Length: 548
Image (cartoon, rainbow, N blue to C red; front, top):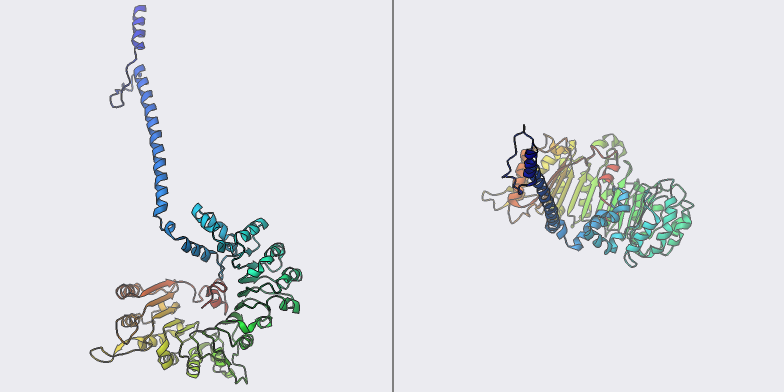
């Protein structure tokens, strides 16, 4: 018995060599594994784990290599630094309706994306030239001071100062740090009650220190009376001030003491009396005017026979078409006209009952026939009811025929018939059998913009519209081909797909730009805006994005 045990132990002490996984024969499940099999299995598992770790390390290395080289492939990393900086500036530049906290955190967000963007941001003082004071929890004095430091010492600044109605504590804390840079201010936005008694001594040092100010935007309202000190010591001594925007204030803009005679751009929402008073003050210098109205009113003042002559005016947005009755603009280049429902027809108060269907084109037609603006190249009618005879008379006028390049209409339900007739007249019709001569209205028209839910209405003649586009994109010596077509409707009134398909085919074949989109800009949903606020909500930008 002992001899057999000794023989077994001696056999176990002689371990077999390491075998490969493919050569290993495991015993049946019913048998216990032998010592050699256990040893071989442990060796194989250890070797496999080691090989797996090496493969995982190789995978991580390959992923790093891919990520490093993909940064070179991505187009965003091939953009020149100058263009990348322009994109950054467009992102953080103040615009109408933008979230104000973006102005505060914009440069910091851009500089925190990657090392390359951070180098670009820190080497560009212009990116930090929009110091913004806004009541956000994370706006600290140290961050504000650092932004002023990064903006440099010589470049222009564009401060944006905002505060709620009854909370100016953060302004009182940060404005004193900004006032020493006022000689570098190129534009200024004030969206707070700057007549507050506690605010007056804070902003008093601005006297004679805004010599570089070119653009001024005043938002919000002020509750306290406009004292002589508040008015005369702020912006009356701004020799470079040329652009002014006033919105949402309770006092008329004309009550401000400003160098009105040097303004070239003016934008405000007010009454006809306020607008006329401003236009009389800056009639010799004004180039662009955006005049909105709070409500329908009698525009042409009773007994007024003298018109306001604006010889330098090039661009006009008239929130009420009747305003054209009292203006003379012989050098007008572009005009945007809106007719507020409830306005007065031909200065006749007795016709107010029919104001909802007034002809918005009639004041425009009378202005064209009276002033003969030979440079009028762009006409836009918004939120207006169009009447076919007057609209066609405008298009066939010899003054418009020679100069019109851009045409824009916002179509409502009552304008479908008129626009169908206009489309028929805009077609290039052969006058002879060989098509050498054609009959054409507005032969220089290159841009056409149509918007409104009426574009998706069955009453709109889509077939005729496609034929008109087809005829105006052909090559003819007497016709300047259409270069840009924009169609904008609402999601509930979409343009039929076959029509879009045909227009896309023409765009590809003839090479003109086509933009078809849907939105709520026609007033169906305007974020709660009503009345005259609808077009104010739809317009883009004031300070950095002037209409012209």
